Picture 1 (tube, rainbow, N blue to C red):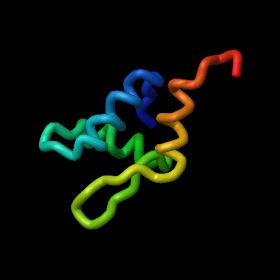
Picture 2 (cartoon, one colour):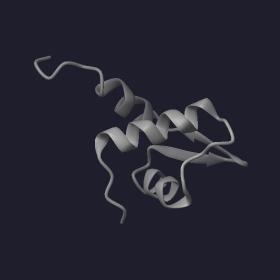
Picture 3 (cartoon, one colour):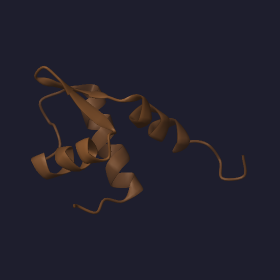
Picture 4 (spheres, rainbow, N blue to C red):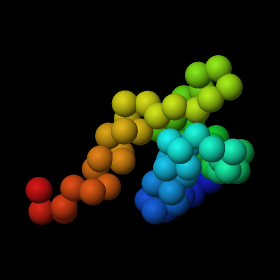
Length: 64
């Protein structure tokens, strides 16, 4: 499995959220699918509840 840093995961998620033509590579998308951060809905990719939680937790201070 592809090893991704937290910053790389967040950058890939934000590229999926923008839903533009500049999607991450297939390897990164497969890694996000394997981690259940995104799911396929037809031809599109959407965040799962776990993916949304992952994004929110990135901005919570460590002391909370």
